Length: 194
Image 1 (tube, rainbow, N blue to C red):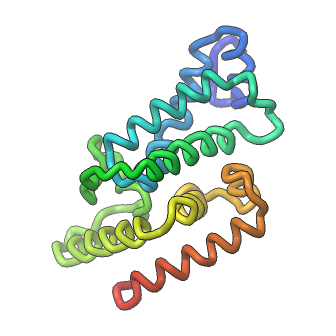
Image 2 (spheres, rainbow, N blue to C red; image 1 turned 120 degrees about the vertical axis):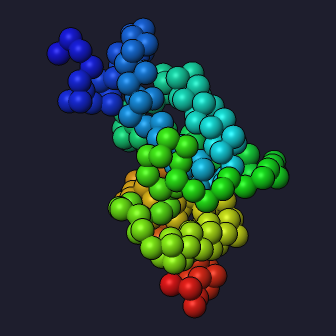
């Protein structure tokens, strides 16, 4: 297959990139940049910071591609880079204005963490949806970076416990207990709203 098609595996694109094919890496970026952006925005709640993390994630992935052995999926490896960068960023205590709760700039669907689907037309429903979104985001922001990462990877990105344990480099039992704790915290924050 001369062209990079949908059927090209991530591993094949990694190998082509290592062989000097920059288009192959560009395709990996295109496959995962929206997912990484969604995760970073959920973690940091600031658009500028999230975009910086996306750039940094792919720059770091490119520099460290020789270390990627292919024993785990490429996307769990790149999620790990992104989560670590987000956690480092938060530990440095960046206090930035929060991104607004809105559909993204390109109008391509709801902000990360909101259910997909048609928006209701009734102003009351819209206002209620916006309030739910605001409260959910506030509740997520109250979590520690580690708990925030696990809830976003599971509920927004849809990763399995096994995949999350690879991303976070911790045992599956730890993932499950963090997830249980994070869900309990969120339920406490959202009681009476949903």
